[in-house]
Length: 202
Image (cartoon, rainbow, N blue to C red; front, side, top):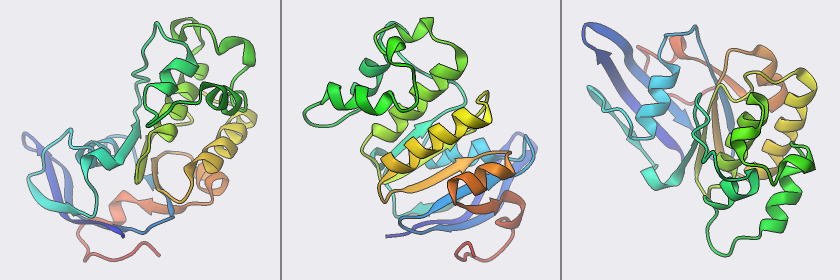
């Protein structure tokens, strides 16, 4: 079932951030949300997550518990290891060995027992992404997921991301044109989904 965003509007005081945003997210698709800083990409993601109220409009086809997210802030449990952070969001019986094996695709094995507080910024970003991907969701939201990663590491992370995504909808807010290519996603310019009738992204 597709996720429909219809007539979404949001203002902060006198500043209108989103105006008549219309978007259709199809099952099993990857989308890259693009636009200048301050245009409303993060606000749109926060609305989908239920962290911001809207002035007008509706979101259909998704419930709050069906969404996982990676924020611009890492929001990790700093005293826990990468494996423990990921295990927190897994449903059912947790296979820590499998979590570790998967994390070794994007992180050095020797850091997986360390508290995340001791990891570099880039490593923390990778743990945050892994946690979002491992949560059993219908929709995955990623806000600037590859910030601070060099091209080689980014490719490793994207390979992991695509492997772990399954057939879930992925919506990533990014500034990087190459991210669209690496992800094999459909580019959405925020300016182009405003003030238009609802339609599928071509």
